Image 1 (cartoon, rainbow, N blue to C red):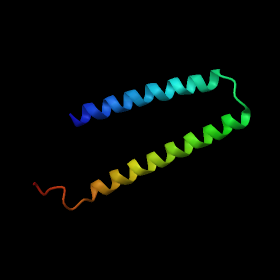
Image 2: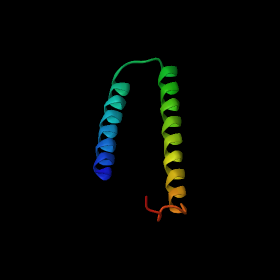
Image 3: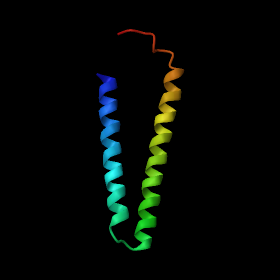
Length: 69
């Protein structure tokens, strides 16, 4: 179930990102708005990648992962 949830989440995110990117490129905005939004979305993406990487590294060294409830 967990894997199916992640697959659905990733596919939905990719579709929405591609669609919003398409709309962003097609519509006419001021160049400063385009630069600002690009930097904002890039920063959010980089921070999310960092959080996921950090959580993945931490889960490798978790001393309690073998303990059952």
